[in-house]
Image 1: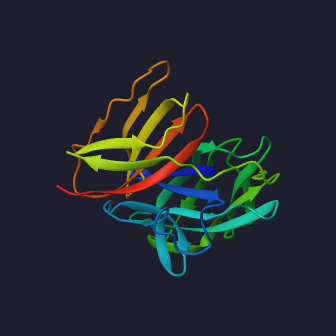
Image 2: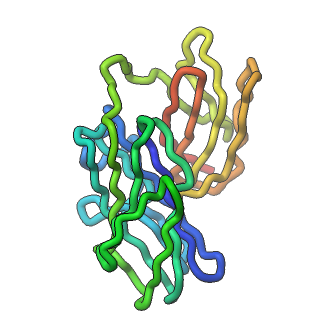
Length: 225
């Protein structure tokens, strides 16, 4: 799976994030297992990709079939001023892949892999047709890829992980809420035993990012109080 986390910051430390991914297990449409609509709990700022008139906080698409893929971005800004796009993290892309922002208002194509992109907003509100993310680079080979057997489940407000293969060890776990915010992160290098994560969070949809010594996956789960 290829994944890119994109941050948007604005005046007065306003911040939001969105995730775009490519996977052979996803489709170009809405996938309940991977995708999540944006929950706009922050009234100052919101960043999202768009899919069939839906604003997406997390969007997983079918694996890239072209060396150039485009994904439309939208944002909500409560105030005018200077804003910044940053590539917070990327995983799974072949070396040399450029992840860029296209600004149709200025005509600029800026490679976020090299540096953040600063821009101005002179009219607050929803901005839906100004930006897109471009992924330009070699296509990942999936000829030797198998569907991950890993799964997550909840027992007594604890996150359990099943399906680990023999000698497969968890290296890192992150839990992300529906807005794209990381609410839990833990590195487990060298630990031979997995200890379930206590889920002391509000009811809602969350995503577990799990990295092992063999693979990296995202799993969606529902937390009920």
